[in-house]
Image (cartoon, rainbow, N blue to C red; front, side, top):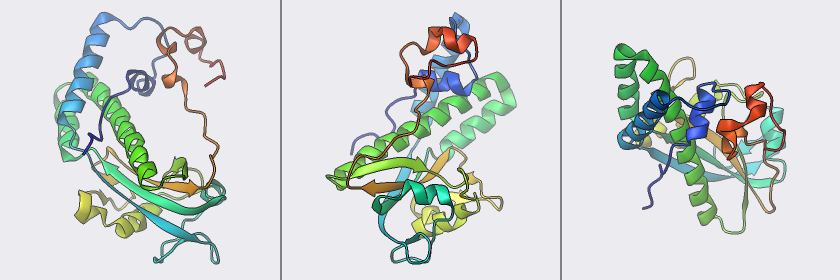
Length: 225
């Protein structure tokens, strides 16, 4: 099986750290590289996904379940889809322990590690999408849409994880307030459609000029990403 965690996006890490552009000091660059390497070395990603038919007679219900997807935004996202995929992924408890230890000994390093872990779980999800497409040839994916986005309440998280049996299958649980445990985890709905679906703005972190961008120094963007 191909590695599911393949990279930590440096520009994405800088975005999470609220970096506004300009040269990164050598000391900070060294801290970034150390944190990125540590996260890649420590993470033990686990994931699962499952495709469901969509029944629209009474809201958006996943075929074969009693689970409905509330909210107008996810309904719009899945408007052209006959099926959707539920995805759950986590970096594992090892990353959770790493972050807790760092918070006790070096808060600055903990903040950088946290940003690196956030980028890492996004990389995991991106790579899983490639696997989903391989299992559904000829289909096209929508963007990922997670509980807590837009008008989908975070309280959906518990039912989502129950449907996917994440506690038993990948060690992913949900707190009383709907927070995923381990924290560096993602649950998401992804639509499957017969034609390409519009994508949201991806963000400045994917631009090759991210580090030196004059627009970012002024707190704006070029609007092209």
